[in-house]
Length: 54
Image (cartoon, rainbow, N blue to C red; front, side):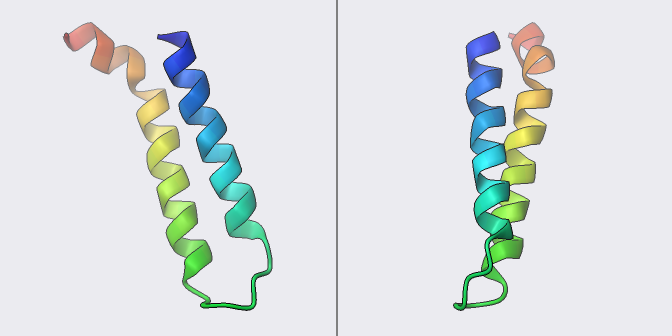
């Protein structure tokens, strides 16, 4: 379980860093990546609850 959480938190951090990079392409790309990072972080945060349910 701890490995699952660690991997998801690591993915969230990487996505946040990539979202913060100044990329000259579309402006909404950073927002989308930031929301995806938030989803990964929320899933990692809720992992003990999800595990307890099963």
